Figure 1 (spheres, rainbow, N blue to C red):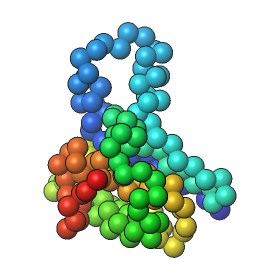
Figure 2: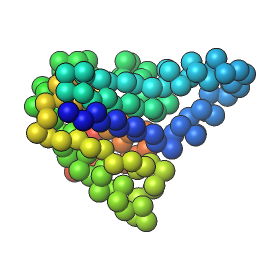
Figure 3: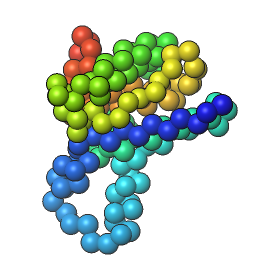
Length: 144
């Protein structure tokens, strides 16, 4: 099977690093900041990896998102299909949508069972993204 690597980097990486008001003094601080703002999801059984690099997402996931088990996997998969479709559409329209927000296509195959963990984190990333950047990916209002 192929190994899929998805990297989601929103423009908040440039803005978010400056919002704290504290200076980064050495490379260890930069490494720690990068590690705190990176969420890695992997499953060796179907050989995939998802990497989300987004300032504040990890802490939002822990503090604000609904806990694991709140939504069913079927619910998460359905919403992720909608969100990914719209996201990919926006990637292909840089003249209509901010190319700094929609940088890379997401290769999400609805016929693959990615499991609960991937669907949970991907869904919550879409919610976080919509709330943070005031975007609306579907007709659904993002809810927590």
